[in-house]
Image 1 (spheres, rainbow, N blue to C red):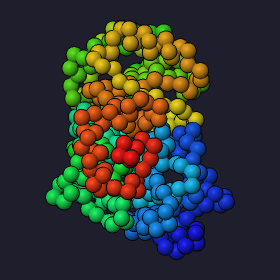
Image 2: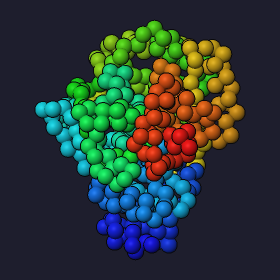
Image 3: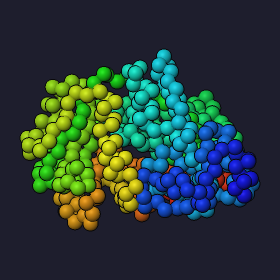
Image 4: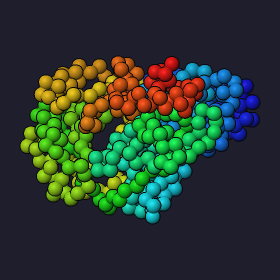
Length: 401
């Protein structure tokens, strides 16, 4: 079968017996342990289409991998054909239209490298080694999102290989329903080989960075953080929070507040003043810096100390305010953490669970991820992929049957 597959698709094919199979198979989360029957390193939509047609003819399930950063690792399953898009990574910028066409396997650092010389950026993830496709199709929240919207809000169109192996361009003037579904509906509807993204002007420098406190000061600082956000933080300021060891994973337990502000240092410092009033930080690295630097602040942590760890990610959301009781519960749970690699991360998304932080043990994951949009998404899944070619453990196929 493998020889026929390679001849049919014209792309490199890896099987378990090959030496580099394990390296190519690996994801960000080392806990993902599925072993595909073959990995097809597709370089464009034609090879993706040929792979899907071959799999349908042979009765083999397919999965699609883009950046490989989703912690649930749902693209890895035993005995499937894995379409690996990482070689589909070309980025082209149209500065006059303020848009970029991005290959389905590109990482955010490649997009930033192409767009920032034009003074433009898409609201990408706050980790530059996250894949663009999975981030955007799953919603996508980063340090520019409060100012310019989620990643999915900035999706203008997409090249998609459908369940029949046809290559289609999806846009507002063609398949508007399907474009809507791609904006947060994940990889349920096809293999996305290109994305057209809306770009926004970014200043040469932003007020960005992090402040760090010992975890013993976390309770008061977390309350101050809650109050800052609740008081109406400007949309131009995205502020996130972590409880983790710093440096990770061998340092002391700390509370880390980090973010970016499209504004000047004086205004940003004033907005953060309540944090310092709660407790003096042990470290303050907020300053004016280029967005290109902002995007790489976590790269070393992710690539050198985070990649490959066997992690169990749990997701949830607070209904209403982050109460004092909730803060106490989080800190008490962290104090009992079984490993120095454990951390707690907070994004204020307005209510809901972010599917990009996939939690395979989450009850009612479909309702948590998709809310009031679930019924429409299920209907579109039945319409565009009635045979469930694009399936995974938390895919809409698990609802449609």
